Structure formats: structure tokens, C-alpha cells
Image (cartoon, rainbow, N blue to C red; front, side, top):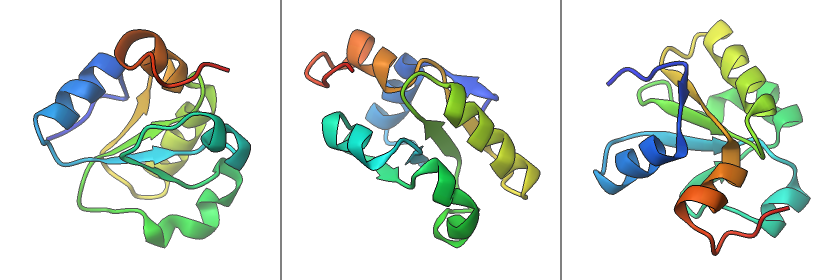
Length: 108
């Protein structure tokens, strides 16, 4: 599978429900994750990503998420620039996830 540069929350849900292999990387801050999270996401705060590249898979697609999509777009570009081949930004981030997919996830 090869991901486009950006995917929607509905596409992320479809991929998850279909059991497609991917790694969901949440680059928000600790307090944001404490407020609202997607259970199957791995949290690595944006500022720590450069020092934690070895924790990220190079053999499966990575979807990067944040609150609304701006920080994750920067991290997705950084990952592509550093040799990660299949990386997408989650458009709208966890805010769209709460609005469109799972209203039990708090908005902030």
C-alpha cells in the first residue's frame, strides 16, 4: 500500500476497520494526549521525533496526527525527508476524528 500525502479521518477509520497495516503516530503534547486520544495511536511528541526515529517503522505506512493537521504535516514532511517512504498526514487531526468518527473523544 502506498499512502497519499494526506488522508481523511474517514479513510483512517476504513483502514483500521479493514485491518490494513499502518502505524498511527500522534505528535501532540503530553497534556493534549491526556485530554483526548485515539487508542491505537503511538504518542511521540513532535519535539522528540528527531531523537526517536529508531522507534518508528520503516516497513509499514505511517499516518501522522496532531490536533488539526498543521504540526503533523510538518512531521510527515520531516519523516519523508529522512528516508521514510510511505507517510501521510491526517487531515483535520483528532478534532475531525471527534467530529466525524468518535464523538466520545473530547474536543479541545
